[in-house]
Image 1 (cartoon, rainbow, N blue to C red):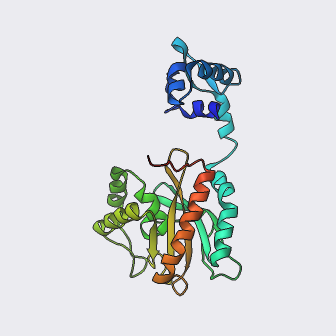
Image 2: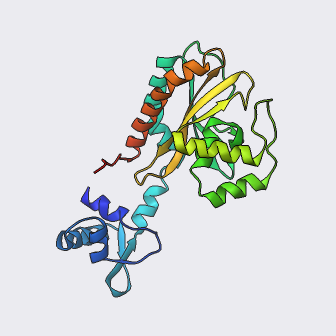
Image 3: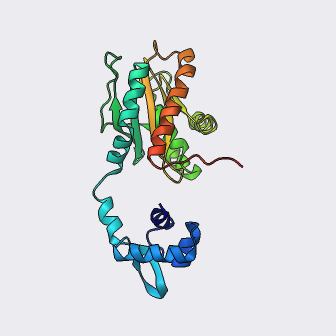
Length: 248
């Protein structure tokens, strides 16, 4: 745990940091921090450069090439997504934001559930989906504005958000309440609830959503299902290293 705390203390892969500074960032005594850094240097996890400063080494780069983010997300979520789908009898999706589009990286459908015509690897516009709204809401304001101004918000159904002002208001609501809804905006007979997934430093790296027909996901049913989705998202985020910090 201490060694990983030191590795996570690098703020940028290109910065050179002293042993004392790394120890301080990792909340370790300088002496024990220095001994751990020497061991990390021996195995290639860090490299020593000019004036006794360190940066991440080739070992970390080679290890990172052995797995993709999508694979990590699927492995961390598969069992929990399956449990959620079977408990509620609905379909769950996971998506990430790639080049201004939402990419499905995982999907689980409960046996006998209403067919949702989506597939892993497919992409959809973020402004008209629950997953996409969650991911857009997590972006810095300037990136949100860049997305809004980049192209037309095409109406896919009569309920699709089609104005910049309405989308901005919707994303503010998502940030406030911690979840997003697709209320018949992508498909006229479908609704979706989506919640963010966070990594070890609290960044939103993906979103998980529960989707189903309007007949199952009524406004009343939504309020019942939202806690299930939030609980599942918290459990997946914990597997990604996210820890909720106690207040006070």
